Structures are given as C-alpha cells and as structure tokens.
Image 1 (cartoon, one colour):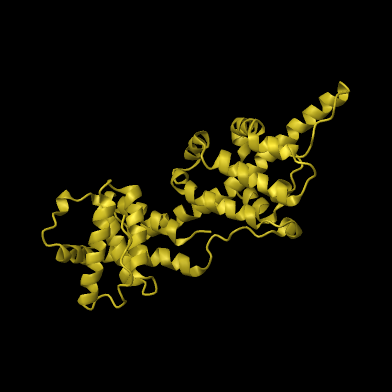
Image 2 (image 1 turned 135 degrees about the horizontal axis):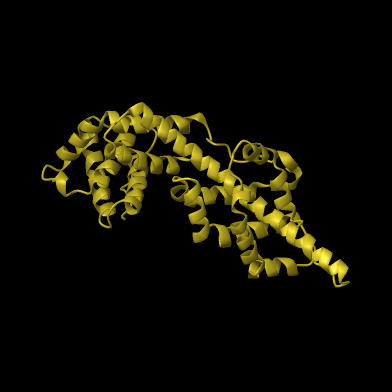
Length: 315
C-alpha cells in the first residue's frame, strides 16, 4: 500500500523536521520515518473499519424500525442497506479483524460521529437510488459503497477533525490513503469470502529500502548536495530562498544520484509537485528550472551516470 509518492512526502516532512530539531540523531529520525509510514497503514485499516461501523449502525436502525413496524402492523422496512453484501464481507474479513483486534482505537469511541455520518448517507441521493433499485447483487452493493466513500468520507471536515485528534500524522496521509481504500473496495470479490486480501503494507521490500536509502542519502550528503546547488547558480542567495525549497531540492538530488533506475525527469516532476504543496507559490517553477540545471551539471561533470531523458514538464 505504501508507495513511493507517500514515501517522498514523508521524507520531505521528516527532513524538514530533522533540521528544525536541535538534537539531530539520524537513527532516531529514521525510526520516526518508518513509524510515520506505518501509521498511514493503520489509517488505511481504520478507514475500512469506518465502513463497517456505519454498516453496524445501519443494522441497529433497521432492527428498531422493524420492531416498530411489526408492533404497529405497518409495512416492514427494507433491509437492503443493512444487509449490504460487500459491507458484511468487509466486516468479516480476517485481515481487517486481526488488525482491529490488535489496536486500541475503534469507532465505538466516536459513535456519535458514526451516527451523523449514517444520517447523512441515508438522506443522500446515492442511498435513495440504491434502495430504489429492483433486486440485489454483490456488484451493486460494492458500487454503492464506492460512491458513498467518495461522497461522504473523502471530503469530510468533521472526519478530518476526528482523525487529527487520533494521530498527528493522519490528516497529511488521508488524501493518498483514500485512493488505497477505493482500490481495495474495487478489488473485493464475493468468492474470496473472509480471505479477501487487503493491500500489503509495502508492495515489496524495495520500497522500504527506498525510504531508508533516500532519507539517509539526503542527510548524510547534505553539504555536498548544497554545493551542487551553489555551483549550478553562483549568484544564488540561500538566505532569500524558502528553506523548504532547499530541503526539496536536496532530496531530489539524493534520489537522482542514489537510484539509477529512476529516470531524471520522473524525479524532477515528483519534487516539483511536492513544492506546490509544501512551499511558496513561486517555488515549483523555480525548483523545476533549478533541478533541470543541476541534473545537466551533474551529467556534464560525470557525477550523474544516467541520461537526462525528456525535458521535465512545465509547472
């Protein structure tokens, strides 16, 4: 689940924090990096568990409505949403159950939020259309939860506040983790029952090594990388640069030099995108031009032994 986009974001955050911290210890900082990545995986499970929590709430409401209708001899309510096949399969998923049982945090601690979320869902057009559909199928049940997740969980300020109270890491992670949750919903198949595989924490060990190597190279070779920056632009006044710009370019240079299989233009584009998020409005254009110049300087000097490739996209 943890991909290189998320790893780069974490390294930008942790490198910046490393330099802001007076007591610099690389081993401690590396442990913090890996811990922050593991928290993203925890969030992935926690958001899947939110679907389960809402579904449980739906069953409670259904039971109340059923009892009332039976008692008053009225038309019985539909159990379609309460019995949603995808949600039940997710609730019974072995990996999710094992993970939740190992954690102290559950949605029971925020049941009022879960109830408000359920209320918003049942008042929505998505819910109404689903309930009005004739018949029932697994595909329909899975699709309605994909739509509901996008509409009510991806962009939810109250949920953001709830998550911020749970972990300082989670608000920064949520946008990317949301994409993994949607991918997981799409992957579910009824024949897999409780053994449906969730996304692994790391696709393979290479990504974990990528995180460690990139972070260490960034810190250990900081002085050399900043000299490359200076030599590429001799009139560059570091004091006028946003400090985050220096950090982002330092990491980008580390990636260019440490990972020969990653094309230069891919690296430049990735860090220009991060500059848009974490630095000043003008930073992305500046960093785009500077990294292009730095890469050409390193190639011409024989320091960087891979081709320039396509020109980085304009930002």
